[in-house]
Image (cartoon, rainbow, N blue to C red; front, top):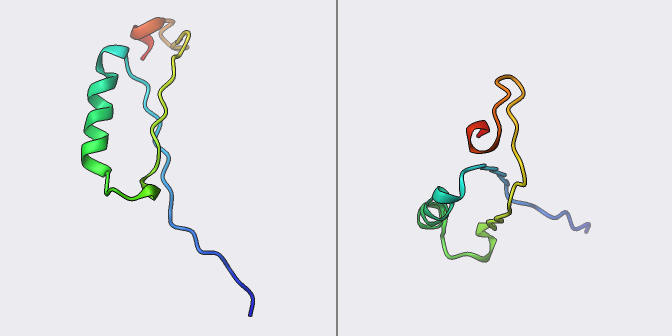
Length: 64
């Protein structure tokens, strides 16, 4: 008998938001999607040094 692993479906969501609203969004995601299972996923938070909107030439928070 050959073992064939089965994997659940995965979804990756990336969100870029100003620092002022990040904690609120994280709290909402934790409330809405957590089932208490170790396989619920992860949230990674990191800083974006700079942001540029190519079309409008806006920078920083205005580019988001």
